Image (cartoon, rainbow, N blue to C red):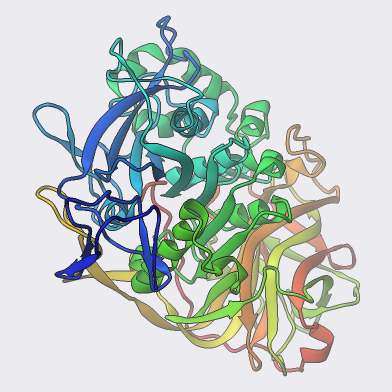
Amino acid sequence: MVRRGTVVAGLVGVLSGLLVVPASANVPAFVVADGVSQPIHSFADAVRETVWVDIGLDLDANGVGDRVATDIVRPATAEPVPVIIDASPYYVTSGRGNEGERKTYDSAGVPIKFPLVYDNYFVPRGYAVALVDFSGSARSTGCMDTGGRSEVASGKAVIDWLNGRTTGYSAASGGSVVTAGWSTGAAAMIGKSWDGSVTQGVAATGVDGLRTIVPVAAISSWYDWFRSDGVSFRSFGTPTSLASNFENDNARSRCAAVRAEMTAGAPANGDYTAMWQQRDYVRSAANVRAAVFSVNGRADLNVKPVNWGQWLDALPASVPRKLWLSQTGHIDPFDFRRATWVDTLHRWFDRWLLGVQNGIENEPRVSVERSVDQWSDTADWPPAGTQSQTLYPVAGPVAGVGTLRPTPGSATSSFTDNGSGTPSSYIASPNATSTRRVVYSTGALTTDLRVAGVSRITVAATPSTSTAHLSAYLVDYGPATARSSTGEGIRTLTTESCWGENRPGDDACYRDTVATTANVDAQIIARGWADLANYSSLSAPRPLTPGTKYSMTFRLSTTDWTVPAGHSLALVVAGNDRSMTSTPTRLPRVTINLAETSVQIPLLGTVQAARSAAGPQVTRIQPDIVPGRLDS
């Protein structure tokens, strides 16, 4: 069955796999056949242009509204089309995608290369693609403010322009007014990492015209990229230092006030401030009306998984949603599930931008990679029947080693933070005493146990010094083949596959990838970090008195993980994580009061029904993926 976006005069033919409309016909915006939009438009003849959109701010204080450069490619049709938007700071610096593609222009400034596959694939099918340079980056004016109002405005203003609510121009300064009469006003935003983060910020404004967002490995609260419950991440810098990597010359010379505001709002001690609050999109998630397709990696230590869980939890129940969760690190789905991704994204955009009633919103919402390249679908997330259950560490005959039970025990257990501990060292040898951590296990499970959501740990800790950092881990102990930390779980091949149409300077072919794997006996499924000085407030730390007991609750990362029968679920508590967090000034010995310590885990199934007596046996541990820059 063929369905047309508008009436087509004449016949529809097929030439070399491309559905084409005769030149004499009134070319429609789109044609649907076999349930999806078809490639009817010539990519080679597509319209390419740049519009500078006023974002309604003047952060560079030059007396003129800041404008974002918006490079557009759209079908050469008189019919209006919807728009797929990717706003980014990366287009002329580190580039986008696994191959680091950058924008290119001809001698007249007309855009030639549009990074990623969206233009090649979707423009022939009746979509426009708009790649927006963040304010203060590339060809835009204004300032970069690392997740702040200017970057959110960079995306929102383009949607407003598409709907006639703000002004676009033919130049970065001056120029003539440009309108978007070719647009239906319906827009999607998509992007990975920083790009994906701003999709959530824009959606949280409730802007009219935004029909869907596709955030991939996206930040929902910028505090949770730079900090965690009072502690600063070691290699992530500050909002100011991050922005400085991507600012253009105008921003470097004119945006000192914006940089000073960010620096003042990001104290090194990890406190939560008003600056962080402004960059917390979760607080405004109740405003979201756009459908959400969220894609994330369980092993992502760049954009930590707590970000996607708290975002989905905060969305209104009325918002249509879809979730993919891979075992990779900071990787785009185009590089870990390519064919299925392109097909699913195609149907998702058809549904929300073209109005094709394909039923994708009624399909299972959740797809999780349970083992390497093996995916399992679930109707919803968290899955029906998931309940938060409280488990307590109970001392055993071996010092620092015990069981994890639904009723509290007694006694205390201690460890010493020597400043060199890492997750791999903490989870090793779980049946033996370690001076650097304590570990409590369910023992081998007799049935599968699914962990789905954000866990929280409450620790009653007595430090021996005035400074103490804590880390905690949920661990699946048992033999498995998993994606390895090499390449964040993928390896890039020399072969290519093509997804869409080519034209000189902008091809649709990308190098293929395969999973990298390792045989392991332990996998961290959730983790968290905290500064004990923030036991009562994230915004106001209190000095610790050596020898005094403090109780603090902090978050572990979001997960959806099934611990299989025969494996053990364990809680590991330790001091500072040298691979991730800054070292406390005075390294402490920490004593844990077990009766007042617990972990709240969202479980499908119960530990009572699953537990047996055997402890975990570990010889092979999967190293963590070392987090890179946000864009890597």
